[in-house]
Image 1: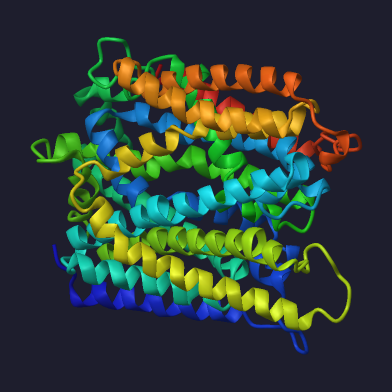
Image 2 (image 1 turned 90 degrees about the vertical axis):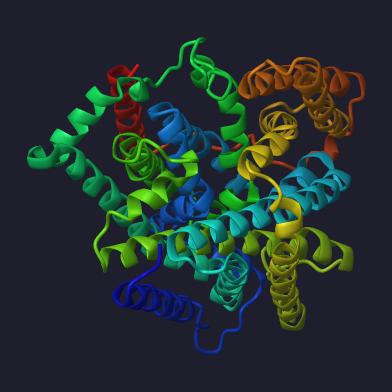
Length: 532
């Protein structure tokens, strides 16, 4: 596929517009120069709408759009559990995790680990997350993004990879998190509108004179098995989505780790003006997660009827885009670019934040503006912002150089990446849950959970490969939690090591949050009841 002149004009206009907007929101106030709180935490002033939009923009990228549409083509609506269960997880994060993080002035997840368990765990996990973010997550975003751009626009993949990486870097390097978060409302609006356009046109093609609703009804009649939310044991994709375990098993472990303890995601909520604003942003993100399957998965299911002979499921979304008329195709392609750029810029900023605040600043003994408001710190703050910008540039260059060697020979890069990170996810979830809610948890117990998570995951994958991935995570989580509890009780640590305050944390939420949470639960109950 190649883009017409009008499509190219739309994409170029988007690129210029979003870059200009990012620079505009990045400007300094008169007489003020950016410090670390400005650059890494958007001056702790993000409004709810920016938080909610930025959470989704950071989450949805090319691998989600192309990959989930492909899963919709192969598996069906059941893949939507990744989105719908995330909506419930966000409510938990907003009600029980954020009050503790914001009460204790947390700005990075490694910092929380230091305040709870001590400095060694902070350094260890900071190094781990940097390696994971640069060589697994960032490489996958730009590599799979470049594949999507190549398939849709016919641009050489290496050119696309370099272009996406550099644009994302330049787009956010001046303003940091604020540039990313304050423009993500535009990115998400474009993403949702573009995806809904693809869904509407594909359903109209199926429905004919009956229109979009008629097309949806005919699609359910044509491929009824693709609308089963809970897969039976004889389904060929049961190992990927193991029936009722999806609702009560390992997906909770993955979601809690991703939405609650992942710097790349939670950083937006940590930059809120206050707890109430963060919780409103969380609710917005939860409603957007409910909408996402109709934006991403539905075109993949429609492709089963409109393009039943695709060589690979991941061709579903690009193939459905070919149905779009000139101009609208450019707009939807711009939405795809928006998703890639937003995720890439978010990941770059999180890498810079962890490197600068958790490694560089601690090693140099420099307290940041987020920790110390004392005067006479301008030189140190300028240095921290500079280091963050350098770290961002180095990270994207490393990702561009290593993307092809690491992922170029893999036909299922995203699936392998999910499996790799899943080796560590149960342990990370144990560490944070115990750190938040069990005062007797110790550093030795936390380290035991991390080691047990990897060893047990690898052992189960080798000894019992038939166990579904999600079930394996649940088993490993339970075992790691038990071992961590035993070691914590056998090796207690001094009380003064734990500097996380929880005694005066208020978990009560506003009426609006509670009403919205009930709405989210009711919608999800209706969706699952309809397509059980």
